[in-house]
Image (cartoon, rainbow, N blue to C red; front, side):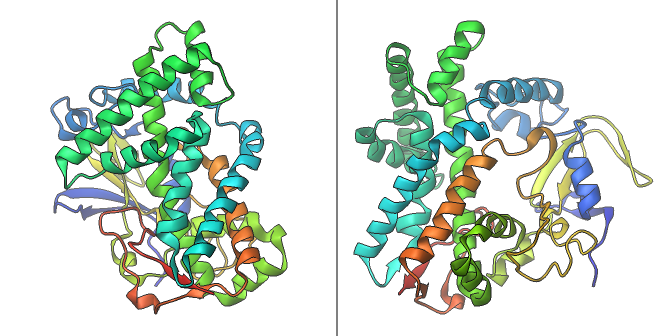
Length: 379
C-alpha cells in the first residue's frame, strides 16, 4: 500500500489527538515552517516547564525559541562549517583507526556497538570541543552517567561533574586559545557580552548530548544494513568512492530490525504556535504535530524503489537530518566520520559478518531508531 500523503488526525503515544504529517513534500515543507516549534504556546505546558532551552532554564515561548535557535546557529555555524570539519578530518581518522585496532584486539567475536559505535561519537565531540586527551576518559564517563535516567543520583553526579569540567575547560581556554568550538565561542563572547560562560557551557553540553545518541544509532544501523545487504557491502568494498552515497542511503533507510518499524511513524514532534491551515484542515494553536519522517524517506514519488537499500543512488534528499531552521548543524561532521568509518572498517576486516542471527540483536527501547544493546561481529 502506498504511504498516505498530507495530514490526518491520529492518537499520540499517550492516546491524545495529534496531527500526523506524511509524504516527502509535505513533511519537508512543514519541518521548515516557523509556526511549528519545539516549544508550546501555553506557558504552563509540561514541554515548556521540563525541557531545557539552548542557553539554560526552561524552554522559552515559540518566538523566544526561534530567537534562541537563530542565535545558536549564528554562534555555532562557523565552528561546525564544512571547512572546519575538513580540518578535523585527519583527527577523526586517527580516532576511527584506534577504535578499529581495539576491535581487532578484542575479538573475534567482538561487540562492535560497545567498542566502536558507542565511544566514537563521544571521542569526536571531545576533539571538537578541545578536550585534552588525558581528560577524555573521565569526560566520556560523565556524559554516560548523566544520561542514566533510571538512576537519578548517578545522572545528577555525572551532570554536575560534566558541568564543573566544562567551566574549568572554558577558563583554561580563555588563557590558552585553540582551534575548537569552545575557543570559537570565547572569541564570539568578546563581541557579544550577552554570551556568558554559562551560555558557552550550555552550548557545549548541547553538542555533547544532541550529538551522541543519534550518531551511535546511525552507526549501529549502518553496520546492520551493510552486513545484511551483501551486494551493497561488496560494492562499497570494490569502490570507496561510493562512501558518500552509502552514508546518505544509511541515513534514509530504516533499520533492518523489523520490530522498530512498528513505532517509526510520528517520531518527530512539534507544536503549533498559531492556527495553521494545511490541506484544507486547521491545526489549532497548541495542537501536537508529528512527522512521519521515515515514511517520507520512503516516498516512491521521490525515491525509485524506496524499499530497496541501494548505496548507488545518485539523489538522496532524505529528511533524517531535519530541514529548515532545525537542520542538523553537525551534519557535515557526521558525514566525515561515517564515510571514513565504513570504508576503513571493511578494508581492515574484509570478511566481517554478524556473529549471531539478526533476530538475536535487540533494539534499545525508547532510544533513537537503529540503536542496539549489543552488536556481536566476527571475521
